[in-house]
Length: 313
Ligand SMILES: [Zn+2]
Image 1 (cartoon, helix red, strand yellow):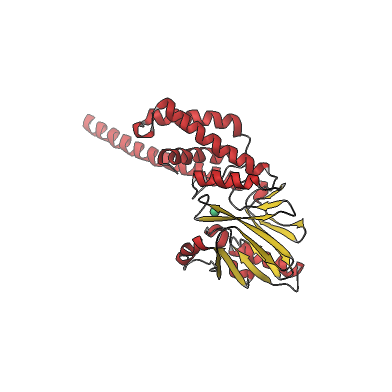
Image 2 (cartoon, rainbow, N blue to C red):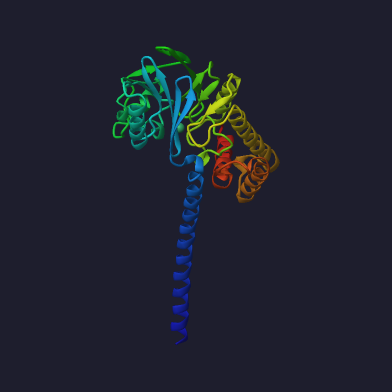
């Protein structure tokens, strides 16, 4: 009888532990998805809004994303189509607001699929992207991404009838290559995915190089503008660029300082990790906890900066 009891208790303990471990794993996923939900459901990422920026410039915010539109005598120029649903809604609005005009050009800021899907909904005459993104677009055969018809390189001043758009070359920052769109006369910069306004990037900011990012943000900060049109969340002013630059500089410096205090990553163990991330979080929390996404995406950014600092990117 005792043996049976002991066996039953053993089976119960094993079963209980497995259930608990499985539940814990689910809890981690549950917490992550709850955080993502909170981050992406910010008021600035809800609904749709066609924004007039003056002098023939418009922005179209659709949920999380924001395109730029320029009304030129050559036709409508759209920067970034984002996705099928958004591009379809944008085309409908453009048909209403500019009944006689076609989308003459679609320009891609970079090759990431969350910015380049659905372009065919706009039926553009020409599709322009940077030469360095050609290889990536060639891989996107099974996606709903319209391939560029024209590849360009370097910083460019593109003239579309009565309008000039200055394309700023941001190399080695985000994605294989990134273009910013500068309107000096209007003191306006649309720089998709380069900076956000007092907001942490999602999931540690995918696909970027820290050194390139610093260089690009410093170059952007040299431009004369007082309106920053953001591809995600709120628009703002020049401080969106300078404060994002500050976040990258600060986080990297703090992590390198932790390496000095607790040892280089090749000597890492659990305690090291606890100290380095704990120490970093303490300072970032003090200075950036009022930014949108600090609770949900702050730690992911610090972890990404830690791996970047350890590996040199
Ligand atoms: Zn991107």
